Image 1: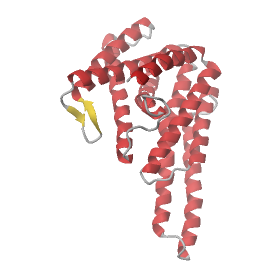
Image 2 (image 1 turned 30 degrees about the horizontal axis):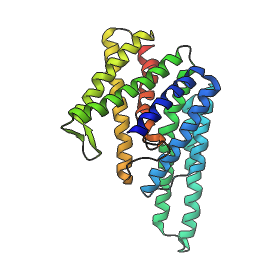
Image 3 (image 1 turned 90 degrees about the vertical axis):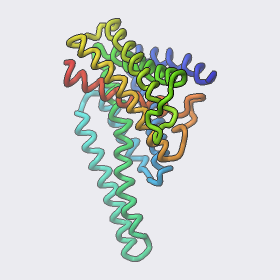
Image 4 (image 1 turned 120 degrees about the vertical axis):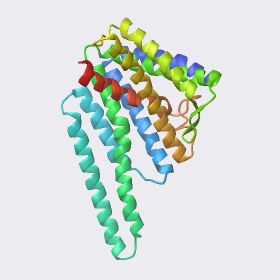
Length: 278
């Protein structure tokens, strides 16, 4: 607990400082975090018996992040190119395996496994690369610095409230088969406290929504997105039979353990602004 607190006291001001600097500093931060997180995702996939293609996955991630910074090509085009490239990569691998299988040197179940490898390579890279590229796109906008601060601090408030309310008042398990330590009371505490903090920040940062009800709904959905993102990563770790995605951050586990809630929040915030708020 002490290590967890000390890391938070150091990391949070440092992250906020880099967000304020923006430009290449923010791009570098997001790139490093994304690469570490994707490595942990592929490690978890590997523990589940599926081999990810690291090289195309990492290349696709870097292309998504760089493209978001340069704002040169629509992300959908990059994603499509990545999917097609990975499928072609997989097709060549499968073709080679099939030729070997004909001569009884490779079992046919290896051929089928190659398809799973390609699918999970794509899913893993998009799981990290898509939301984090949106973080760069948001930060590049005129009021982007405030929205990124909202994402970071709102998610932190939701996670922290869920943890402490769950510890103090938790009685009923929320999803015992996924994360036995999460409780209904903790989840509700995260929604109430997190939404309150988000509403206050919307006002302080002058991030106006269409109406008060819209702001309340936005804040509640924000906290729900954070908690669903947390549960998704817990489900992956449960499948891989591990407690933490890594050990790079003392007291916190891996990078993905700190990033899991933010992933869906970034998607929610970006597309809410694009399709609803704007």
